[in-house]
Amino acid sequence: MMQKTAILPSLYLPPVEYLSAIYRNDNIIIDIGEHYVKQTYRNRCSIATANGVQDLSVPVCKNEKATAMKDIRLSEHGNWRKNHIAAINTAYGNSPYWDFLKPDFTDLYARQFTFLVDFNMALLELVCNITEISPHICISETYIETDDNRAYTDLRKSTTARHATDSKAFKPYDQVFGQKFGFIPNLSCIDLLLNMGKESIFYL
Image 1 (cartoon, rainbow, N blue to C red):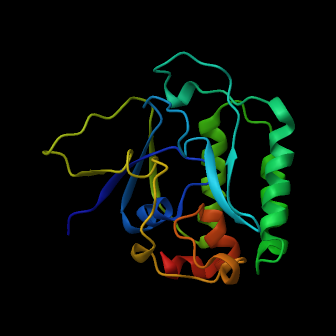
Image 2: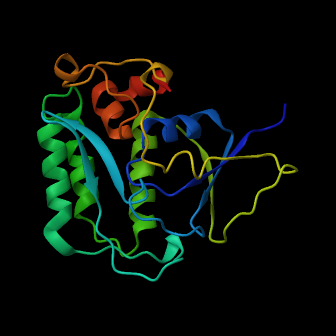
């Protein structure tokens, strides 16, 4: 049987569909040679709060246009690390698994990463470990050109765009504010993880 390979971008606590792609493909290539694009999931994620969906954005240093993802440096502006943990704690303090997993995430946010892709990868590794997913991941520092003759599924655009999501494409699972807002699909994978724990793999 031919193995399935997907090309993915480096994202910050990526949406559920990204984690699903990792689980459903035999091989993953994360392209960090692609250009950084503002206002995408490369440096932001969406969580569910008591006031609705909230975006958490990781500040990055100013860069020239057409800067490769691998060269994007984190900014320490605004004490964002503490603010992100506080926002996640407020949103998911009543979730089934936050108290158990809080130390792992808190420790990771306390580490000083220089580059965005390194921080993203560390978070992805933590999420995969918790959900017991063991993907075969390769990193490409050079932008990957694709064509019809290559056995790749290119998911770089579809997983980075911040677009309206068809809720019918995702099975509902229990969410902290589900009774207030109904099911909100394709949030950050941390929403799935903190609500379902190790059972997340069955959802994927």
